[in-house]
Image (cartoon, rainbow, N blue to C red):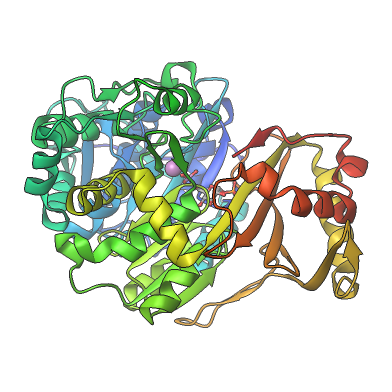
Length: 543
Ligand code: VG1
Ligand code: CO
């Protein structure tokens, strides 16, 4: 086989964000752009010679073409083996599992996750390491540095590989195994959860709707919920993965999955509702008449995880990202286990999980997961909820009310200001950093600041330091606001404002969060002057 060494166009400096490299699809399609990043992944991690990788994506536009390029580059770089999901599909948590199960040298996952797909939308790629998790910052930095100086990439001249047939083929000396994307993942779920109890729950007439949002979880949810656990056909909606996600925005939150939320709030709605995102690592949880915030979901799952068969021994600790509410900290305290606060992004949980310090992790952005893989896992969270519902034999609303009566309620909301001018967003944050040292003791709309800082994280396992991870402002009365700029967008800047107000066990737990948070919202506006900087009166997305 002829191995061509191609001198690439110098499209240099691909800088990964919170979760891999994410850009406009058309940019990814420019010859030399994806190629430079893939070559940099191989070269910056000691070369691909003799190595094996898992490859798959969420099925968005350009997924299959990107995989063909990766196959030819892996072969030209001397890789020994690729494991690829049939039709190029692999949910992110399933890819993480395959990396661990087959002890590969890592994986390349094609996805821009919750960002829309299509030729005029977004594409992305990330590299996961042999532990199955997103590469740690130092590896991401090494790849990025390589993209700045790279001058050539290696690719073979060959026909495309048929991704639709399960089985083994070869490209030159490289072995290619096309696998069913679902089966190993399904087997793993069966070791963690009491499928018999969940089957009995569905057999008793319990009703559910799962919105796969035309993204990658459709085949997984159908195989597990409908075919295996006996949920009626039609439980999974929008179950066929489409390159443009049916023109939708595959982000499982009350804004982008509104029809599902409306259905659960209606008289004829089912007992339980859930949705997942583009690449299957996020989850949204709803009960009849109730939406569960991801922060609350993490707390409830942590408090009840011992009810599922894979977790009967309990968990060693809980980790949450810094902007996630403190609800799970209260559970950790009650259980007498450690809790950790990490920067945004799943890569920060890997060390804690590898070291056995935590058994469950979560983010306010609808990510929850455990040590079964090294990614957040949407369907896993749904199955854990089902397992808990099957054991406790209560409704979602009853479980939530009980939880708040034991722990109190952390009212929570995130306000996003999207597509801001980048310079404007930076100046807002920089102005805030400048005044942070003097905020203590100042009052804004009647709320007094008791502490404020620019969050930095010292990893307790490898001692690495990550600074400038978001601004935290604590008010008296157990209220907090966090502000940071998104690292996953592809257009302008997005300001995320995370608002939280705690109400004790005997307080009112029935308020609309926007009302419960009104004092914090007003204080934030007075302190940060969001409208003055952005000319926006209201956020674009409130979740
Ligand atoms: C967002 C979320 C973060 C999540 C990341 C990747 O990042 O806030 O919690 O880990 O997306 O999720 P940012 O920097 O835009 O706030 V996924 O499901 O898009 O891989
Ligand atoms: Co995702």
